[in-house]
Structures are given as structure tokens and as C-alpha cells.
Length: 159
Length: 276
Image 1 (cartoon, each protein chain N blue to C red):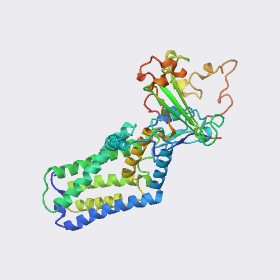
Image 2: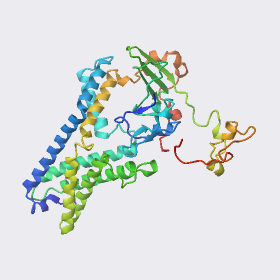
Image 3: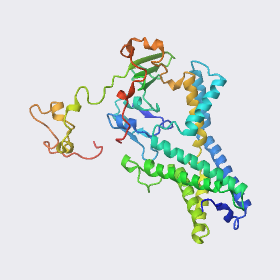
Image 4: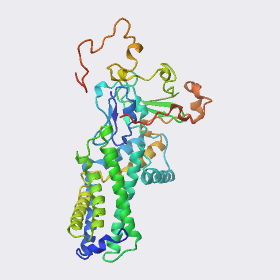
């Protein structure tokens, strides 16, 4: 089940918007609170759930470890450097987990982005992501891009 | 100008009794609107049902004394300093708007009931103007900096929806209150601003049922309840275990942090959101 936001808890701070790898957590234009704009595209990574300082975002746990009627909630405590999970099954049993946050400072580990030169103007304007052909080895042999295929990058969501 | 009682001059045209009746009517409208809002949304019913559910999940009972302590903490953090906002801009604008509104309402009542036809001690009109200024400052900050923040995908400022009823009527009240006070005695323009001021105030207090005016009564209750659930262990099903407890430090998974300081510093702190 994709993420959903408890509107009364959200204060529109934008942590979830910044962290979402799928870019689907947005701030509602009128109410200034976060919501999932495209639940289909949510891969339930729990990034926004952990990032929310108000615990305003929830996800129903995957059915393989927490069957229907359960609750899976998580708290990321930066001060103490821990992530705590509380899984509550529908029969009342509870499981608690506690582990260290293993996030590393940005760019200091693999890939060592701190040592990579910043993208040039052409790179920024191209349809490829930062260092994409090299990093995903698309330049082995030939590079296939939209341009090669005679296609154009359109703005917005389209199918 | 800002130390003179704006209602004293008005008393020459509008009898103080009419002004006092208007204020009483506005208070009744706010109270009635809030009660209708509660009945319509069934928010009280939902709130108490939720509280009962939380109590069933409680792992410990919270004593009366503890509840008083929690209530005091709620007043100190959530009510008086809007401490629940992590969005600092929103918190500042909320504090300005809230205290400005309280100042404006209280001083208006003191002026209308205490000094209906004569000059008041300079401090009260001064506070009245200060309240209106704070309300306008906080309100415009919210409107242009947060609500219509176009760079952050907000709607443009001229696009108005029903959700904006509260903030816009507040803004109109504060703006026209100040404009009326400054143009009082300048003839038609002063009267025009007075009519707009009264219309905005009536819209503000008359629209409680449709606007979010009543949040000032719900929010403290919700904040208190949230703290109670934390204290009784139900915590809305959120994890309650912490590294501060010695038995948790002995967990196998916590081996890496056994000798780490309790405050891990900024190394893993996420940067403030600014990319949306």
C-alpha cells in the first residue's frame, strides 16, 4: 500500500518532498500540506515516513511480513542515531526493532561524488541523468538516447 | 494618531450600545459556528473514540498529577509558542498572527466596553494598533510567503478558494482596521474603510462554520491528547523504545553504537528541505 498523509499532523515542511526518490510527494497548492500525487508510482521505500518530523505519513506494511490489520510504524531519531520499528499484528502481538542509522554523509562514500567534477552546462541540459552513460555503462558499445530514436522529451506526466 | 481611541470618535455617530451589541453578536457567532462545526464534522465524537482506542492500547496508566504536568507542557509549547511547527517560517507567521489577533480582540473589547465614548489610556489604542499590525504582518507573510509561494508550486495570489476564507477575512479585518483608524475624520474615505472593516469582521466571525477559525479550540485538545498517548505508551502505534534504555543498548543490532555518544551530532542530520 502506498504512503498516505494524516492531514491534521502535516505542517507542510517539505522533508518528504525532498527525499522522495519517486518525486511523488508534493505539497497541496491550496492547503499547503503534503500528499502522494501518484500512489501507483510509490514503491513503499518508507523514506518519507522516516523523514517526516511529525510522523504524519503512514504506509501499510508489506503483506509478507505484516498481514492485513497490522500496523507498521517507524521513527528515525537523528539525535540518538537510531531507527526504531514497531510492528503490531492484528492479534495484538508486537515486535520492536532498534538499529543504528547507517546513512553516510553525502558524497563521501561510494560513489565518491565529492571528487567528481560538477556537471557541465551540456550535461545539465541533456536528457540523461548526472554521469548516466558512464555510471550505468550505457556507453559500452553504443549510446541509445531519445534523440537517436527520433523522439523528443515532453514536459510533465504522459503515457 | 495611534494612541487615540478609534471607537471614541465613532461614538458620535454610532451609539456605544450598538457597538457593544455588535461585539456580543460576534462572540455568539463564533461560539455558535464552532458548535455547529463540531456537530457537522463529528470531530468531537471522533476525537473521544480515538482517545478511548488509545487508552485500550496503553501500556501504563497516566496519573492525574502527570496529566496536569502534560497540560502545562502543552500550554507552554504548542499553545503559547506554536512549538509543533517544524516549518520555522510558518511558526513565526503563526505566532505573529495569533498574538496580533488576541491583542486586537482583547483591546477592541476593552475600548468598546471600558471607554465607549471617551479617550482611553494611550497604551490601549497603542496595543490595538500593534495587534492589527502584527496580525497583518503575520497574515501577509503567510499569504505571500507560504500559501501562494509560487516558487514552491503554490497557487498565484489572486486564486482564492474556500480554504482561504479564514486567512483572507483575517487579513481584511486587520488591513481595514488600520486603514480606517488612519483615515478617520478624513470624510468619505474613512467611512468607506469603516464599512469594509465591519464587513470583514462580520465575515470572519460569521464564517466560523465554513472556515478554520475553530482550530484554536481543537488544536490544544489534539496536542494534549498526542502527549497523553506518548505518556501512556500507546503512542499511536509509533515505536517507544529508545537507545537511552540500558536493556536496548544490549541488543545485538545496537553493537555498533554501544560506545557512541547519545547525541550523534549533525553528521547524519538531513538538510532542511528547500528543493520543492
